[in-house]
Amino acid sequence: MSARTTPTPARQYRPAPGSAVIGYSIFASRWLQAPLYLGLIVAQAIYVWVFLKELWHLVDGVFIDQEHAFTEADIMLLVLGLIDVVMIANLLIMVIIGGYETFVSRIRVDDHPDQPEWLSHVNANVLKVKLAMAIIGISSIHLLKTFIEVGDLGSPHAENTTGNDYTGEGVMWQVIIHCVFILSALALALIDRMSYHKVAAGEIHDGVAVSIPPAPVEPAAAEPAIDTVRS
Image (tube, rainbow, N blue to C red):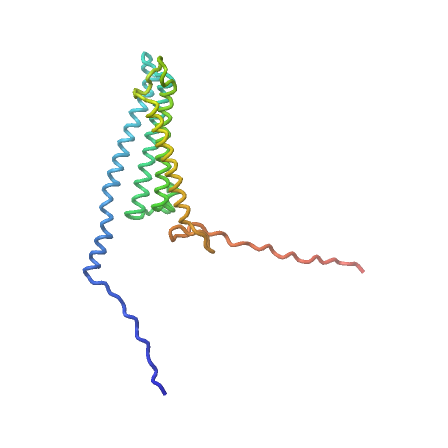
């Protein structure tokens, strides 16, 4: 009768104290990015001040200073400038909140009624796509300003509305760069979509379940009708 052998227990790996300290130090180094996001908050406050100055300039030129009243083109350019500032501020807030949430620490606002919809599933890929869309919007505003100025480009009686000098080649390159921004955003969106894959429980994106389909409800079986016959 052979003797019963007992299985050898698996050897547990215990990290050395030095490697643990190095690992925790590297992990804690993410907090070095916190001052960068605080600096972006200061930059956003500066943009708020710029927006208020431009808004007062618009109000002054339309309602107060009638001697140098703005034309329709001037008002349109100022309004586009205000929209440009707002879109840059939106870009800043996405970088501040999304970047801090993704790379530094989680923001515990799950139960807050004003939590942005995109913050619940933010990650590096989603953040890159949203930033690309914001850059396209900013580029569209600048391109629209150019189109207002170059409507009579080359005409001997052309008036300079924006204060900038444009050439046909410069406008062409501006359109090409805008198209490159659009193609880049489409490529990022396609790459982000390729990271999704279907499973039985729903969709998985970067290892996180993003949607779980409801369980199908089977219709109740119809009861057979019972005909009562009077005798």
